[in-house]
Image (cartoon, rainbow, N blue to C red; front, top):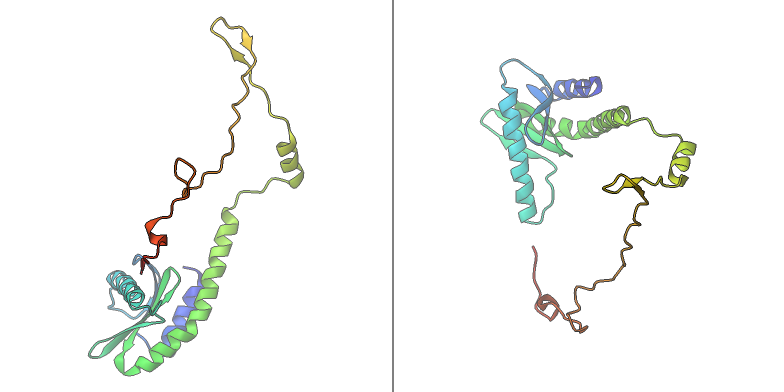
Length: 195
């Protein structure tokens, strides 16, 4: 985990007086965590990712969109989760401090997203292959194609055959074989609701 994300999680946990603060991928892998002893993070991350996915689908089914946060309150503890792209941020703490947990998670989301975006950009830049110099790229494109020598069965060189020319034809899926336009049933007035 990158240093900046670790600092943000530690700060968020301290300000919220939480037991744990963590980031998990959408498939439940722990990406970073700051915790007190005694919390099983691997299973928590898997359940949190599953819970977030379920909440997203629930929001889609009632046309509410993506959840801003998902809160699960137990007798003496609360778990607050928020989606951050493909990552879920989670805070666990006392249910009596629920308001503070929510507030601190919401405040940290901007810093977490900036830190994660910066990390992804740095990784992408380091993984890119060195680009070809513009002059070399122009020369490579402008160079005439080399003709390959082809030999017949007796070993005599034969000039290569030119590639067949493809005719560009426009195909209209609404034209039937005799040139008349056909209209699909959905465009004859019967509407289909895809939702």
